[in-house]
Length: 110
View 1 (cartoon, rainbow, N blue to C red):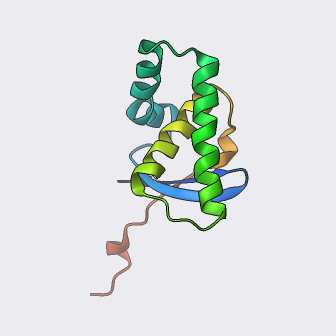
View 2: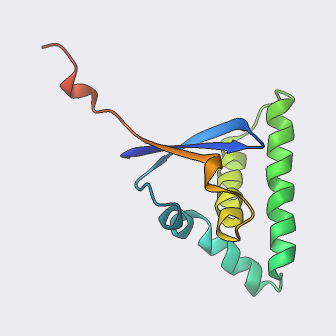
């Protein structure tokens, strides 16, 4: 992975994920598009999906604030919900920081 995506929610650092791209729309297509499509297939409209995505994000946020353990699968679900909310323009791009990983081989002494 070339990049690391740092995700903030309500000005609180939540987690980081490896990424192949700096483009959030490409990350959305990789991670969250299938979940949104499945919601439409099951009959959920956009407002219902937004409410569910916000509920998941708030739950992970509360667990993080209260220092409860959060599973990796919950972080992945949080990431897909955050990307879907960004696609629906509910979250700004200021909640994401994407940094390029350093190549440490250049800096190692031989």
